[in-house]
Amino acid sequence: MNEVFIAEPLNDILKKLDKTELLFIDNIKDKLAISLDVGKPLRYNWLREKKFKDKRLYFIVNTHADKAILVAYGDKKEQQKIIDHLIANKERYFRIINEPF
Image 1 (cartoon, rainbow, N blue to C red):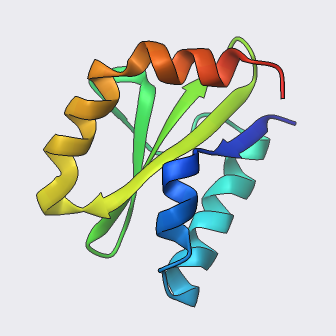
Image 2 (cartoon, one colour):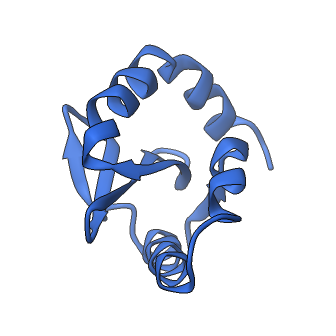
C-alpha cells in the first residue's frame, strides 16, 4: 500500500467542494493507495493530473518511497499557473513527500 497525503492548501479548497467532487478526490486517493501509476503525467513522471468534468486534480508521486501527495485542484483556466507553480516549487514538495509521516 502506498501512503497518500493531502497538502494543506488543498485541504482549504476541499472544504468548499460539493459531494461529487469530494467523492472523485477520495476515489483518486484510494487508487493512488493501490498504484502510483494514476493520471496523466505532466512534463515529468512525478507530476500528474486527473480530470473531473472541467476541473483537474494535481498530485506528486514518489515511486521510490511509495508516497503521493495531492497538491492542487482547479479548472482548465488555472492549469498552466498551477503547473508552473508546482514545477517552480518542486523541491519544497519533494521535501514534504520525503519526510516521515
